[in-house]
Image 1 (tube, rainbow, N blue to C red):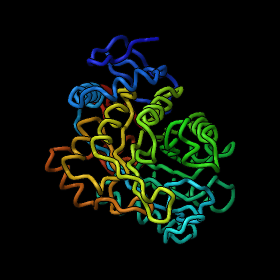
Image 2 (image 1 turned 60 degrees about the vertical axis):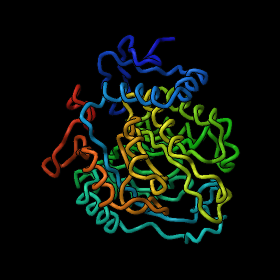
Image 3 (image 1 turned 90 degrees about the horizontal axis):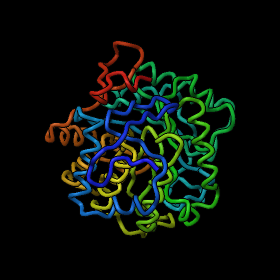
Image 4 (image 1 turned 180 degrees about the horizontal axis):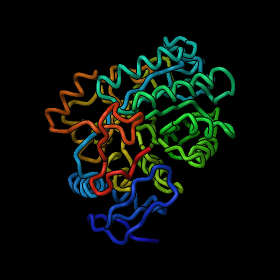
Length: 369
């Protein structure tokens, strides 16, 4: 087993994660590992908070030295009516949450929303559909047109559409899709307490299809489902031990919604989010670690602590699929107060739409799409 960035921040060796779609080359002195044990991850996660933050910030600065945060906008392009039974999700048809099933949005409306998000500062536009799986036909064709349109705006395009069948990831890649989101939610051991209508292996198979098509993987999980600390570390272990680390790792705090089985779950404390983000940063040095759902319950200082722990991406805009999120103005004001600049899109097309900044000073063109 190779030694990577040890618990005191010392790096040994040098490794490139060859073959990863759009992988960020690894700076000298940083090693990527795919063989983490649960005990090692618990030791990182459980160390004194300031030591954990120092280690995470040391790793973060060795890869991302430009003090920028990626701004992502998320739109529900097909809301409600999902046949799955995810215990946290207000879009499941079986729960009475006040979320009505809606048809797939027209392409023109989605692209108008993407343009508005771009003008507000977003560089990645994420489109979510409440489907169990993608079905070939007019709706999938419409999604492909959405992806093409978002890319033509000079933004990165991400989709989360459920499970993929053979050939569908390739069609998304041909349309220009930057990333595909498919979260694992929690550890393999706790997963059955959260959802029964699809297996953990189903999710892993979709991730493999995405990787094989050359699309970046966006994959993370949710804190506050009733899981243990071992489960949280087990989720990060699964992510870090994938054949290639995800390009994006969203860390969500459960937003309890009345009508779901998890409506009464205790809210996640901010320090728990900080520990999870810092651990993710240490295990997956080159990933964009995204501070996702749950920011409405965090004050400015807690959000900045998450960024100090290694979060360099946020969803912004006043809504995340169906739950509330800080508005554009609040986020921009927070970043300005902290002296943090928004990251510009990587390899945006067509050229000239927006300036392109490199996310890593060591490798200026490393993540061009």
